[in-house]
Length: 87
Image 1 (cartoon, rainbow, N blue to C red):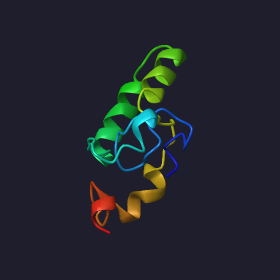
Image 2: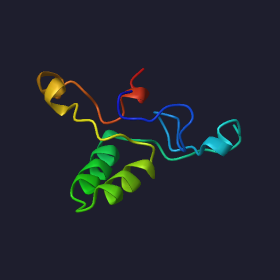
Image 3: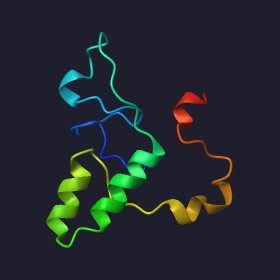
């Protein structure tokens, strides 16, 4: 997933918002990371006036400021909000 910061980040899972300290605790459930929620965080970060604030907002959910929407435009009608549940 292009938007996440990877396995060493605070929230390494591309499917849910599990903290890296609790990723091996299978007795709990965490909120799913949805496309709408990710887009909202990225839009809020892009509207920040200071670059540091933008980075802090994105890092709070282990996201990167990557614009993949232009590459996906032809496929948007086929993509669901939670693709990991479609598997």
